[in-house]
Each structure stands twice: as structure tokens, then as C-alpha cells.
Length: 165
Image (cartoon, rainbow, N blue to C red; front, side):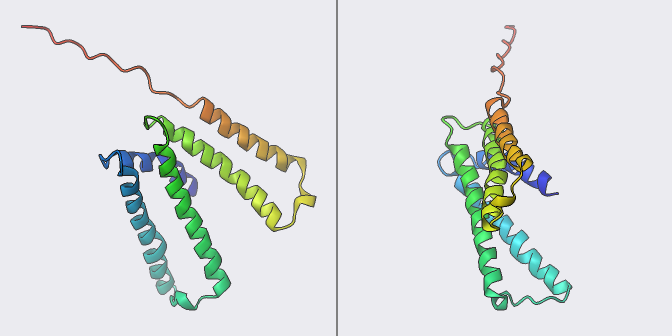
């Protein structure tokens, strides 16, 4: 489920921002709707689920360390989503051809960052084996290859001339 959702996120995000029909503000307008979706999915849905399961919904009373780290995680996710939109707009002429490039950099880079941060956080560098390092290298290589060889749009087709009566 997550792979499919995140794998289609960039395409949907780019499509939404382009369909705002506002070259200057379309990406931020789209991000506003992403925020609304996050609110519905990450605030309303958990409250309903917790209530249905009889769990506490007084989230202000949750353990401080738990909610603080969760808030940091949510903020990082939202900043990352904003970064996707800003990256789409960084191209000289943003088109759908940039979507796989941007998303490949993100989704190849994120596991590398995760591996390094988690290994450091857990002080596990002494336990690193060569397949782990190879996985990081292959993730970087995969991101590079998809970025470098992303399909480009074909040449524009010529409009056929109408026969004159």
C-alpha cells in the first residue's frame, strides 16, 4: 500500500499543481490541498480509529517524548512534501518529464539517509557488513540511472493540414 501511494504521489502532485492553472502559485495552491488531505488522513482518521477501539483520544496527555518525536516526524514529512513541489518548479520549463527525475532522487536518496541516520542513532557502525554498504551504493546507482535515463517526451507532432474546399 505504502509503495503504491508514495510511488504515485509525485505524479499526482505534479498533475494537481499543473491543473491549478497558475504558473506562479499553482504548486503552493496544490500543497494547500495536500495539507487538507494530511489533516483528514492523519488527524481525523486516527481520532475515529482510536475512539472505535476504546483507546485514549486526549492526545495532549500523551507522553511528551512520544508526541514530540511524532511531531518532528510529521514536520519532516510535510517539509519533504513541500520540497517535492519546489523541486518540480526548479526546472526551467517544468513538465511531466521531470516527475521521475525528482522522485528518483528522493526515493533513492531517502533510504540512504535513513540507513546512515539510523545506523548512527543506534551506534551500529561497528556492525556494518559489506552487503549493507553495497545496498547503499546500489540505491545511489539506481537513483542516478533512473534520473539520467528517464523517458523524455517525443518530438511534438505536426498538426495535419485540413484540405481546402
